[in-house]
Length: 273
Image 1 (tube, helix red, strand yellow):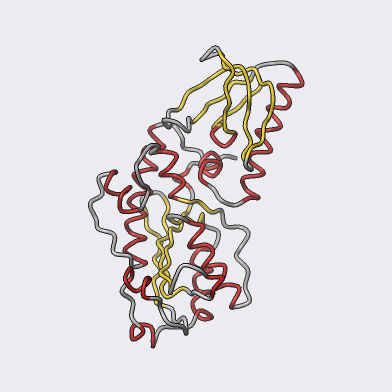
Image 2: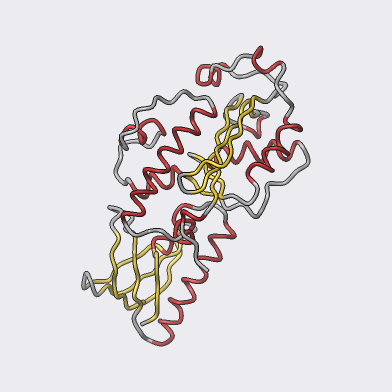
């Protein structure tokens, strides 16, 4: 059964780090999160983490976290199990999630743990790019400002989570205004987990293949990657194309009276006519 976005428990999290490269030994020095469902906050998480290595001058310029602040902070071995409990079975979100996830997975590896496979992952930067195409930049503070959120970005984990939550809620309202309420569609558009996305895409690809085998039309509801408009179209499918790890439907679009290419992850609903 398909679930509405409002029925899902999300956790937005953020990290501050000693530098930019976990593979070079950089570590998390602060991690924070807010767990919520709809507009209801369920729980919060925030702690400094002792990395047992210096913070780079570049990172200090951003987060202003000093060695003294970290001296009495808990070890990653104490923090990570608590954070895993905190995010358990929620949809994990972050702004530029690949960065935070790399660090999170690195800390878990150092404590002998794996990242849980049952957490769906959503990148809020990916949301901003799809829902607000054409912005000159997509840094968190800039997107927040464009959405009318006037809170300054402080580059500390919990305050950045608060700012990201405000951005998430504004973007979610814009999605709902477009009629995008289904969590499966939400994951298809903005998710990062390869397994979740593969399952969703395979279902769409199977319907496209069925229509091609039968020689019939598809009725699709589509989110444009150019202007974020949502349209309903009848399409005569011709082929499934793959380019740079993305799948596309190529077909004759009856709305535009010409051959068009549609991103599979932008197809919100598909049925064989």
